[in-house]
Image (cartoon, rainbow, N blue to C red; front, side, top):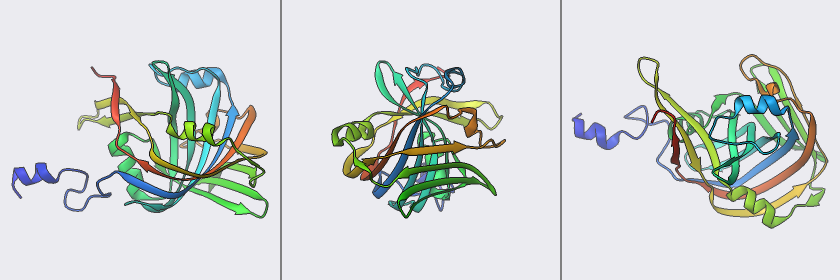
Length: 245
């Protein structure tokens, strides 16, 4: 293989059989259970990197079913997103994510810098309750629940939240172990078709784990529960801050 061929084909690894296809990536019938809770403000400040800023000590714990995802297949994801501001704009910072499918783990980390690790999340209806769980190996580390479709949510407010900017800390090490890339990345969802959104009573419990420290941001008070179904596109991102510059 010629050097020019390597350059032309070098999109992802392995070179001759990439773990994921070229984007953008379309998601159909993507289903969210989002439980917003109040946490310890000091612990939150210790985990959110500058230049992102925190206005309130809130965390959004998300369970997401993705049954139809371009190039990624059928999978489920869960994790914590922290409401932040960046240069006066409100958005969300992805603190940690756990999922059960290798292509979006590899693609998410390599392209955008999503903080993805392998685990076993679920999201399903249980009679009158929407239930989300997250297991790391044999250990249950998160359980969320919400009354099923108790009240329709404000359509415009939900759309605004889906279209808000999202921020990621992308880290790629050099072969000597030092950081070669350390960037704050921004992306925004596009072509959003909001099919439904509901609120209801919600509860969330987190358990300690050495390699999945969700409980470092403890649940002090559940603020809201949100259930969303939407089609959307995940485009590529852009660098908004370079920590090595």
